[in-house]
Structure formats: C-alpha cells, structure tokens
Image (cartoon, rainbow over all chains, first blue to last red; front, side):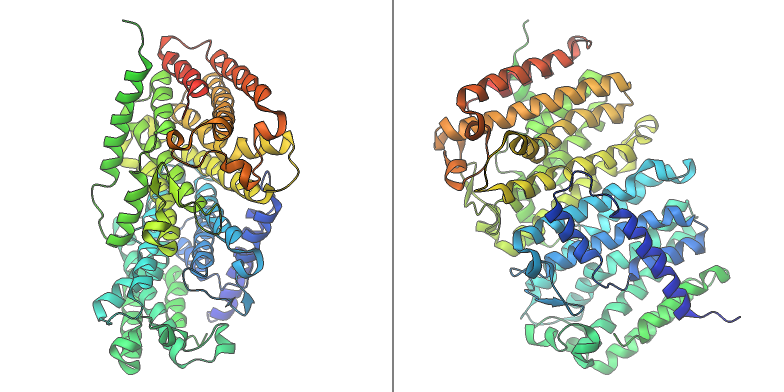
Length: 298
Length: 298
C-alpha cells in the first residue's frame, strides 16, 4: 500500500491531541481562570506541525513514542505561549487567530500574559519529568532541555520575535529577513526534529542530518507563510491576508519578490529531503512532510 | 570568631553577582535591545535573597558551589522575569521598583514582555547545561528542572500571581491570602533551598527538613513584606508604602491585623529554625538568614 500523507498526518494529529489532553487532565492547584486561558489557546485548532515533525523524527531514529510525546507536547506549549504573547496589543495586536478570538480578547491582557508565562513553564515541567523515560533516554534529558531552551530563547524564538518587532517599517534586506525567519519560526521547527534524536542518543551524523532537514524545511515553511500572506485568501488562512504588507513586516516576497521566493522554497525543500538520504524508509514521512509544507495552501 | 551574618550575606551576594555577570557575558545571537532589557532588570539592585538561600542550602548538604550557582542564577532569572511582567500596565502598572524605573518604562511594553519571556527561557537553559555538573549531580538534573518548573509555574508562582490579581478588591480571607503567599513568593523561596538538596542527592529526610524550612521562612518573608508595606517608609522600601492597601490587595495585616501578623512571623521563623535541628553547624547560616528575614526593615 503506498504511503498516504493525509492519513499519516491525521493519525499523528490525533495522537498529539490525545497527549495534550493528558497534559491538561488535572489542573491540580491551578486557579481555574488561568487553566481555562491556557487550555483555550492550546486547543484552538492548531495544525500540530511541530509535534508531528517530532513524532516523525522519533520514528526515524527509533525513539519510543511515549518519550517523543513529551517533547512534542512541550514544543506545542511553547509555540502556543509565543502566539498568545505575539497577539497582545503591545505586540502584533491581533484580535483573531485561526478564525477564533485571540486569548487576550477573551481573557484580558493580564491573564493572556500570565497564561503565556504558565505555558512556557509547563513545557519545561512536562519534558523534564524523569519518571516517564527509560534509564537510557533519561540521561539525555538535560541536553534536551538545554537545547529546547536555547532554540526557544533569546538567541532563538524570542530573539526572532524581537527582531521582527523592531524591523517593522525598516528597510528590508535579505540577511535581516533570513535572520528573523531562522529564529522566530525556524529555531522551534529545527528543534522539533533535532530534540528527539538527542533524546534517543542518535549518532552525531544522524543528529546533523535531522538538524539540516529542520533548518531547510523550517525556513521553507516560513517563506511559504510569507507567500500565502501575500497571495492567499483570509478565510482559508484564518487570518487577514496581506496583513504583513500593511504592517510593513519584512518578508521574503517583499525583499526578493514572489517568483524568487517560490524558487527558494523549492531549493530548500530539495535540500531538506536530501539531508535524509542516508536514512532508511522510516524517514519517508519526514520527506513527505517537507514536500507538503512547501505545497500547502493554508 | 562568632558568625557574622552581615559579612556572610555580603560575601555570598558578591559571588552571586559575579555568577550573574557570567550569565550575561556573551549575548551570542541575541538582539542587542533585548539583551539590554534583560540585563537592566537582572542588575537592578536586587537583594539576591533566593540565590543566597540556595548557596546556604548547598553548603548545608555539601553541594559544590559551582553546581549550586547554576540553580541560584536560574532562580534569580525567574524571579526577575516575574517582576518585569508583574510591573506591566495590564498587571500592577508600577513605574518604579527599588527606586529605579521599571523595565517597561525604559524599554516599552513589547520589549518588557519579551525580555521576561527570554529570562524565563534562559533560566531553564542555564540550569540544564549538562557539562557543568559532576556525573553524580547530573543524573538529578531532570528532577531539579522538573521541580523548578513546578514551583515557578501554574500551580506555583504564576498561579499565585493570577490569584493575587483576581483577589484585588475581593473580600479578604486568611485561607485566600495564605494560598496567594504560599505560591506567589513562597514557592520560589521554598525551591531555593529544596533544589540544591535534590541536585546533591541528599536524603529524603534532609530534603523534607529543608522544604519545611523553606515553606515556613518563605511565608514569614512575605508576611513581613505585607507588614512593611503597611508601616514602612517609601524611601527605604524603594517602592510606595501603603500601595497594597490603596490597591485593595489581600495581605496578612488586612486580614488578621498587624499584631497577629507579627506573632505569625515569629512562629513561622521558629518553625523554620527548628526544621533544621538535625543538621550540623553547616546549617547555621540558614538559621541566621531566617531570623534576618523576619527582622528586616526593608
């Protein structure tokens, strides 16, 4: 039977959603307003791209799914917190995301800030729980936490967000937009495939190959986002098409034009697929996901 | 020579400041505006109470200082990020802290939110670096990260902050103010002495004793804060005296009165000191710090 990506993505998405429901099974000593606010954004219709990449990479390196899901959920929690904070009035001031009201529009600015904070902490709490790992995986947990924090932090995702905010209405340059993309979205996408390899104790060669895959596919993903914002329909995107341009955001199309941006997506996608050449058939889903990320229309 | 607490605190504070300067030695790939904003608040004249408690607890359980300083700095980074976010206009809306302008007054709301986010991530990056620990300590790192995240998160510090915000102008009750204090400040103070014991692999009995110390001394610390806000001078406190009352914040004096609050501080401090009965002279600084925290005037 030929590999069917649509069925594969749907199956993994269900597994991820189930695992995220497990994260939010018990509020413990959490104030209910905070709990509701955190949950609202985690279950707001995300594509679960980072967790799915994580599970696919785990399959490629032989990491048990139970262990991989800890990283997968942490990545989604971090991604979600960053969206909540990015949408705040003092940042992007967005009222809608994926067709639903943003967190601060529903719960207020104070709760949105604190829900984001709580989701970040929860990500590190979830991934570091020693009792869920085998002895062999457990010894790699400090490095996994360390690199997750690195890619999510001031040199990674947070740094990229700062540069994105500061670059609005500034003179665009390819090096600047590349630097923003590599960090704001690229760093977490890269870590989605690198971290499971680190947790599994995969060979440095395999870790490098997955890192290259994540770097190329992650950048391609963001360029496609730029292109869709320029050419897509608001309804399909779940956000306002053309909003990057009206905000003076630095994007690939604004710097090198639409056609060149599309060719860059193709080049990066080929590179991502080639990086996995030495893997066996277990890496086929990752290759298919890279192509899907390049060809998506929302 | 008798033990001199003032000299002890000053010595430890210097060690902590030196270690924090090491954290901020190299911005790497961090946007300079973000780096400056993060640094501004970390070096804004804090007392370094959490890091000093951590070093004192490390001495009591025989954890090497190099390892303890990783936890100590992480605690201070988390404490700092929480202050930056708490001061934001949508939360406490404070313009001054410790006599200096708050982060968002200097760098703007967007950068203050992101600096807080970056400091939280940096805390987890700093404490999880596997290369700084001995093999024996390293195997306890996942649990240390896990508990740090627990105490800093939705059931701990962030949860306490939410309850604090939601309780303003509400009918005060002792159980509510106790719950806020235990989490908003208590959880991180408790972890300051518990985490070094976990990293050292101390016996469960010692971990429990230090946890009890941290719980009692941490609550006493916050009640003293409430009392000083009611009775102290703005200049000495570095913030507006009486601000809790004018905001309708729930405090110990507002619920049980000043005198009873002072007696509660004494009771908790005795309890903290007694918890360390079975420790040898290496725990004397912790005992002295508990008394100092109860008797401080700013």
